[in-house]
Length: 454
Image (spheres, rainbow, N blue to C red):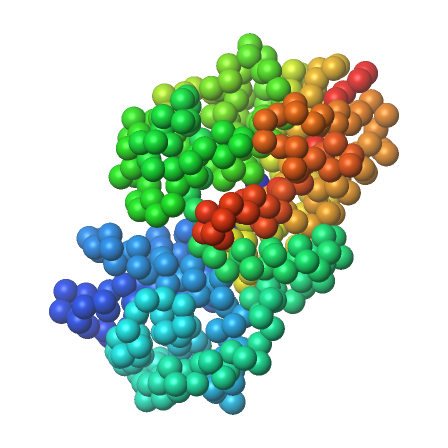
């Protein structure tokens, strides 16, 4: 599960700027991109939240371009900051911290997007002039970005080609856990925009054909160049929902759930709840966030599905007992870095220990909610072993009424490559290489299946 939503403020609109109606072509998109970068880098907003302050009536194409600029900048933040550091010996002026976002947006377009250099430079200069805090540095923006257009090849030659964009604290952890080759492969995948994965209520092959997608071995539909999700066939009718291929795995580990009572803990935004309801389970969806539960209800309504929805802390929820419990626990979400590149700037090493302590409480309480013989699937979208494998070993050492139920080869279609020696599931962002990187990979996930035996 993605980490809990971070508190954020709406992105600050530029100071005295040209109105978006009279500004030059492309200005609105770049202005929104800079505002969104500010929201993420300065105010701790998640990438999706950073666009909540977008102007009403903004052309959808401008919003899409702004999102792509910001997502690309965050994916390549290590490279971008290193290059800008070489071009600005004194760094970003302390009196104008917003200037970094202007430069990052401009540099992203020059280095990683199909945007004419003169447009990227010119619009960045216009953005600098449009804000009181950066207006005096428009000349600096012009000089830095023009140098970048001329010298970027030589400047990039001095960077680590594998790990320049991997946070320093994550790199040694991944090497230790998965080996240098896998860590390099994961870092490479994190640089590439991910495809759109969806789960269909029924007939995935038919929907894959309608959406020009392909059906992955586990039944997930993968779509390239999808465009706005809400405009795709089947969305309004509730025929499918967005869900990464790895995120769809944990619910499948429960096996046959028809007519069984199942608790989905930390359930929002509801993809796993939907899977369980479609499979015939009587689902109790639990989440502590009213806002996230509102989104879950909206998703279920669109899909024409129903579940019992409970606003409660999963660590103290007193329902049950249940035939099965699915706990997709809050985590650092480092396995979703490709899909949520803001994690590269929002997470810190201390978060692993903090969240591991929460996970230990959650998994222990989840076990208490089971009937004798009931199944518990514990999962996280973290690459950190403390949040996955170590949690299961700790629980099994502490509780003699719980046992692991290893996944058997061939038991769930498509999962054999991800089964660990212990019978758990571990996916990595570099798994499922299917030709081009753009159509390959999936989120990094851990999932284990356990049974209450007394």
